[in-house]
Image (cartoon, rainbow, N blue to C red; front, side, top):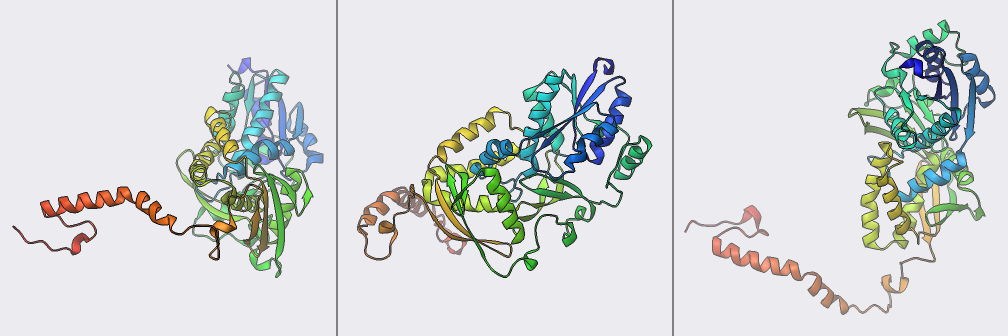
Length: 423
């Protein structure tokens, strides 16, 4: 019953959707107090005016939590360690932020004695699942209110009209903004407008973070990244926090036209959706770590890790962060990557990431064994190895050849080219 809900914690961004949700909640839950919660994961907002805007929209108070370091250390670090990239192209920038935001919203809701939490996600998107699965895991007693799934507002234009009628401050919001965007320290996403036709090429003015490779500098930028157990710890010889490294890589990647990705992805609700992403620093980190793994992880573990990276990306994408499957996957990743320590040299140039070199105290690469020159490797050892390694192949071939001869079937190696006469 709506009368039982006296206080609601709202995931507040200061944007159009969450701004109009405040008066809508007050209308549909009479007498309720709306507490806004804005979680700073690196999005560029008008922070100085955020609180006043929430209050002017009808909220009783606004919490702003800066969790950028927590985001990098506890969420982005496990993500890059896993190597998970959804459907091979999406670096999970929005997906990885939602569980952390939901965690802080739930914490504040419980501290405030709220009976419900609310969000501004649509019924078509993935974020509704990510928020609500996190709420179920962390505070299942809270009721979840999702206005976009029940109200009559169906377009941006109608939302602006509602805001005007209810005296909600719009700031620089207008009906001309055709793209829906999400931004944090890891990426920026773009959806809607002309992107809804997957054959349309994204127009240059749409991009907000990265230069076009065509306009990037005509000279190379060389960087050296240092990792400790897969975690970035230094850039160009300078020890820095993960957040500081990511901010600098974002700057360097954006300047060199790196990190653009045009994706037609499979949403959780089943439909295909087109999004364009800018992930400059993240793209560089994934490329560097992949090179370091190649010389520090043994082949069996590396093969398994690459398979599990796909599962990891699906778990993150589907909002299952606070689950046993994610924790179990991270336990494997931590063991697999305990020797992924060392440095990687990369060259950034006009949208390209060129590998310049990699080294590690745990490197499994031994020049003496791999060299084509004089080496301690005994070539004669290969004979016995091949005989044993190929034993099953040889046995199968002999058996099949014998049976083919007895039955008159074509040998597999000859295929349809063989000709047999009726007996």
